[in-house]
Image (cartoon, rainbow, N blue to C red):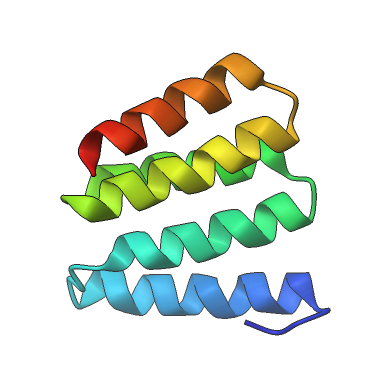
Length: 95
């Protein structure tokens, strides 16, 4: 990712995501998390949440707990305390 250049970082992750999807990379969830973090940094919260949903759809095992932890932090940042706590509890239950 390009620090300080979120639009360019987003474009880089989009390219990586397209390649990873085409090659059926099994850890594609990591790229969705990266894109979610960029979106969150840009205050594009609906886009960030959509990427976390995509990450959850492809993550398995402990990776799902990691994604839920990231999404919990976003909910907390957005002031959605109940959703943040629910994601944190779900992540803890998976560990």
